[in-house]
Length: 563
Image (cartoon, rainbow, N blue to C red; front, side):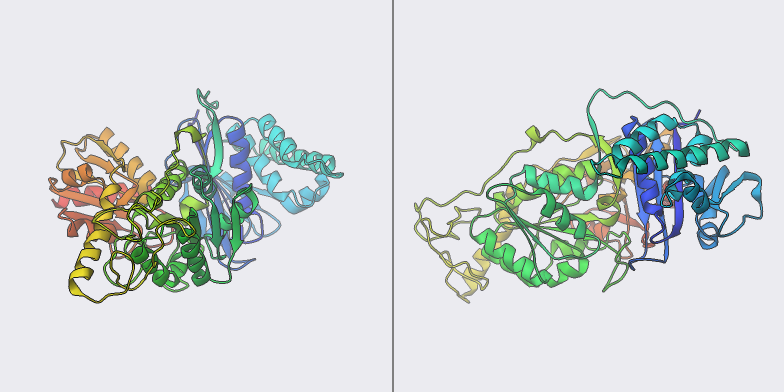
């Protein structure tokens, strides 16, 4: 018996390889398994190398998996460029209408398109391949059939024919797999769960978290890989008092958010690195004028157009200081879809509490990942609201050295929301002593964001593994294996990367070495940590793909041996 099944569907964009992985994961999740997906594809609408991967397990999952149990290859290129990830004893299922595999000992060729037509659904070729994979892995076909029935029963005239065609295709694939005699270790039975679970993508979780925190308005511009947040909000943020709009540019988005936040609304947008750059001046205005808003930056490879559909962690420095001059914007970077829900809720609340912009810094691999998580308890999400002026201090909006009452237009305390340096009531001034006082005020407000939590284990060790964002899963898996092998290394993690939890930062300063896995060239987080007095080194990767646990573990050992 096996605890895990890792399947990759590889081919070209438009061949359904990503959908195949997601369909298999969805069916398994419905049957009670833990699942996690990962996909990578080119930026063009159709064509180009693409693949989708599904990991199905009887135990909780941290990563998509380093090596494949099954490679489903639609063409020769897909086979040649993915077979190296197939584990020893793994199986190749390939489209025999496109190419042949020379070493066919552990390979099954299927004329999937022809078989789909015979099944009565020409679009069911991927279902045929799923049937073959499920049979070889000992997965219950009944659970997949149940999923197919629910998935395509939509109250339409042709639904029954589609369901019957897909189930026929599934069984045809299974029959061919049985004839081949090829098999894998059977997957263990699905676990039973004490709590209700849900299969959700990272972007969906983030949107729902923001809605749970009382978000009023969402205004965005389509940009990969953040467009899904905008379209999800358009379909799901409904009800009286809410507004979702599509702007004509990222500059228009941030300008609209500044205006909405100034008017008292709880507002958010989504973008990627290029859009964050265009929003820089508007974010500077929000910082100077102390206007609450949230920007979700779904990181992709860069600079410029870069790798618009790949994953990276290279916007951290830009997120903390997105504009010119002295800024330090709060940044929350979730490590998985479950954290994305609570991170988005906290981002909305932080923006209200300190009255300024907050960056929700996620990345393509989290936003697009589908994973089963414990259904978020919305009762645990608080709704914080900015302190609104009652007119008690007149129009002295910027009085004092910390957060002050916010005058909502139309209410008491009229003032000038000024992007130029200003005095207590917002009037422009160039006096040095005022600039000093207001700069110190803006930074002092960050001290109210003191409720970020963190993880810490084996804290007596003098070497620490500290991943951030989407590298959390691979980092944790590597740490678990190293611990089991007797390697003495501490674990620290937080999604609150700016400001860092004070207790965690104090502990890190005492360590001999802090290793930071991150997907960028510059080692951005370790650079920031060094500026804060931590002896940090990055383990970097910039391929557009997540870390493999085996590679990360090997590099950690290398760094430890070097010390």
